[in-house]
Image (cartoon, rainbow, N blue to C red; front, side, top):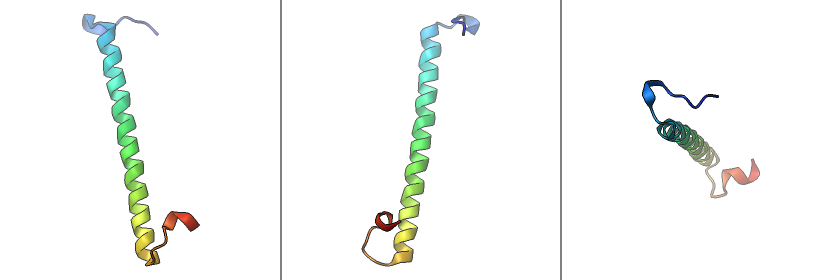
Length: 58
């Protein structure tokens, strides 16, 4: 990997942009997983119709 960057951009800026991009991807993945878990729990609760948590029994 070379530290040279196009258009004379400082390598600090390049690494900050990469870090921000990675953090955004991780945040989006986390939100997707949280949303999927929430929807899954909501549907399981609707199907069950009882007060017991759906994730406890599988």
